[in-house]
Amino acid sequence: MANENAVAKKEKSQSERFMEKVVKEYGSGVGEVALTDFQKRLAQNYFVALDSVLKATEERRMRKSEKYRDALPVTWANVNMSKLARDVVTMARIGYDPAQPNHINLIPFKNNNTNQYDIGFIEGYRGLELKATKYGLEVPDDVVVELVYSNDVFKPIKKDSSNKVEGYEFSIENPFDRGNIIGGFYYHVYSNKPEKNKLVIMTIAEIEKRKPDRASPEFWGGEKDKWSNGQKVGKEKVEGWYDKMCWKTVYRAAYNDITIDSQKIDDDYLKLKQMEEDFTESKVRKEVDENANSEFIDVEYSEVQEDETAPQQEEPQSDLEQAAMDLEEAENIAAGNGPGF
Image (cartoon, rainbow, N blue to C red; front, side, top):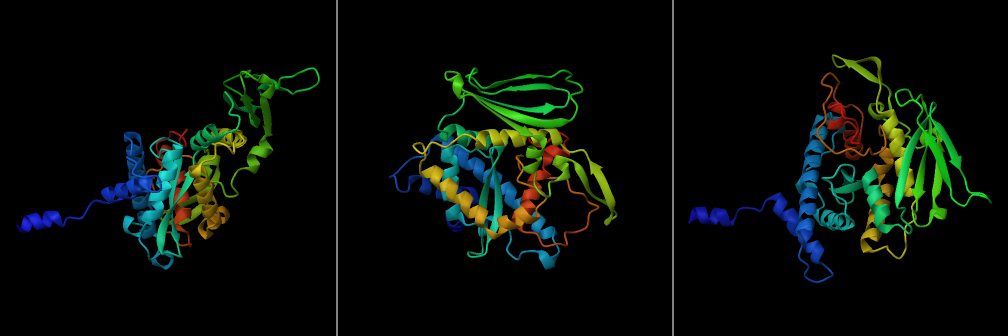
């Protein structure tokens, strides 16, 4: 009898409680709506991804010196579950899948008004493509994204009185020695209406302009602090993944340039825009913009390899800022595979 009571009183797992919240949100306002198998899988993917993020962020919190450590643990018990469930429903309906590389990144940040952790959702470059394709006014049949190097031959063909179709000529003269990056371009292709084709050229200065003020050298290359036996001993040069970061910058610009169709805007899109505005206006996001190593990089969240010789963090950092840095120093870098491309 005692064993039966113990079983009856056994608390549901966090995963079960999460799914119940999500199921409730899916059914709210539109009657009883059963989750499809695909929607259930997406919801579970969000739980698995966020569970890893929370654990890693809590480890970072505990490694901070007590002086700068937030007193609130980064655990499921301290997450605003009602808001999270609503947001997950929105993201899943749009089609973002955290299990897919470069779709969406999940960032916990403390809401001082509620003394709980809210979850910020940062689009990866593939997620940006998905949104533009779903909600775009005139979605191109193809999007070409290229970097141009000093040894390449690139000739734009712009529209004029004698040329109705915008285009370009591009050839790689020496694929094994292309020289230095001098710019890039993207080209929107409309197969049935080639007069709508659009070529946008970006100089290297325009690409660099979009580089974060304090970009991580692990990605963009450059110098970073060198440590030995817990002491800073100068700087060391890091090669990074500069070419790929430049290419990704042009890629994001290409899909940001697709106009959203007001007739396709639904409640999920409006909710997404509100989430983005709330996140942008948050004090924590402002701290990231001003102080973090870099922008939110499109890599899968995973464990990082720490520099064991570096000292404990001695400067105040928000949990969101630390999570953003985690995204940059993900397993792909440690494994030598590049930043999630």
